[in-house]
Image (tube, rainbow, N blue to C red; front, side):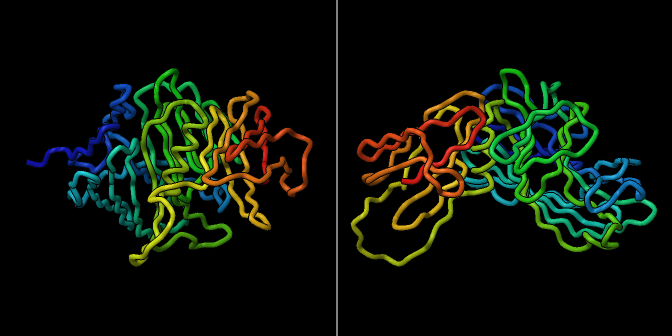
Length: 339
């Protein structure tokens, strides 16, 4: 028997069709809601676009769309208590696409490591590849992260920019979120959420995309709160890293942190080293409400002040108490403190 393959943890259940290798179900177990609609499921789409309206900067008029469902191989890679993974391989036109689906313990998104051996060449049409999620619900709108905030748009028959993610929002329940490490042309329309991965345009370079493409995507569930979605996308793209070392004695505790931030809507967007032991911390507000941000450091704080992006002191109140610093962020605004 060749049953569908299932990846499951405490947060989500992901079902991968044995025949096509596509995700036919993404169930958010916390809310009990399904993300994927339509039988063909979520996966890659091979698109032929019009040459005349295409370029390196423009996605041309869609002429034909084919789901990538000719799955040459489907195999389970890993099935331990911390990570489960499945690898699928497809053939489309002259190209081969591999994707490794992996789900870690406690993670609320499946990671998709894509390796595309792409041989699409534009001529009388332009080959384009996207990743597409047919939604199991009618979204309220589509949310994309932009510098220092988010933008929400209705259904648009066009790619629009997102720095890290696109979210098909639904009222009072989690919606489908698509996160990328390197792609930014999202398209939310007609009950679908998609991301353009490869555009084999002929202008200005006649063969711009031939070769191996390594892309990382995450498909999961996120609430409509802009701060939560930003933190989820950031944690996917910036995982914890480690530095191996030999055994040695030390005086620091076994765990600790430079600082911890407490805020309801504000997001810490940058931590920068300053001169003479100073640290610059930048934040922005996402909900249109003035908010107080509290920073608690792992050591005592000598002084702190508000500065602008050029490091010049600003007339804004910053309070210091022991190892804590508090400051305010105006609605939809940036704020920075030098500590």
